Image: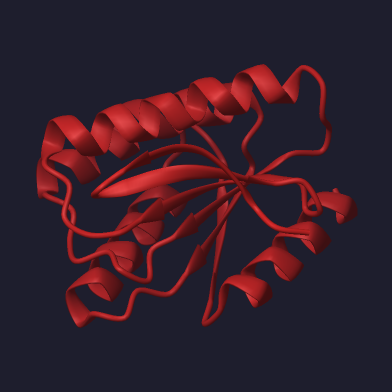
Amino acid sequence: MSDTILYSQPYGGMLFAPEVPCFIVAWYGFANSEQFRALMDHGLELYQAEAQRTQPLGWLADTRSLVAIRTADQQWLEADWNRRAYAAGIRHVTFVVPESVFGQMTVNTYSSNASASDAYTITFSQHRTLAEAKARLGQELHAA
C-alpha cells in the first residue's frame, strides 16, 4: 500500500500510511523555525482528527534528509509540542535515521532530552529504512 500525501512543501510534508497505521512527517531539507513549527503543528492536528477514527495510530519521522534543527526549536519540541503530542495519544515516535551527521546528532539530542522528561513518556526508536521503521512502529502499536 502506498503512502497518501496529505500536505507538501519544499522543506517537508505529511503523509499517511494506512497499513501501519501512522502519520509520517517527512523532511526534505532545511526548514526555518516558522516552517518547522507549522509543519509539526499541522501534523499534530491531522493526527488528532484521525485518532478519533483510527486506533491504534502512530507517528513516524522520516528524517533521512534532515540537516539540523535549531536549539530553540528543539526546546519548543520538548516543552510544547511533545506535551501536546502525548495528550493527543502519541506514545512512541519512530525515526528513519538521518543521512547527515548533523541530522543524526539532532535526532539523538531530541530523543535523549524527551526521554528524560517527567511531564510525558514517549519512547523512541531509530531505523535505517522507511520499511523497517514502519514495521517496527506497527509492532509497537499492536503490542500496546
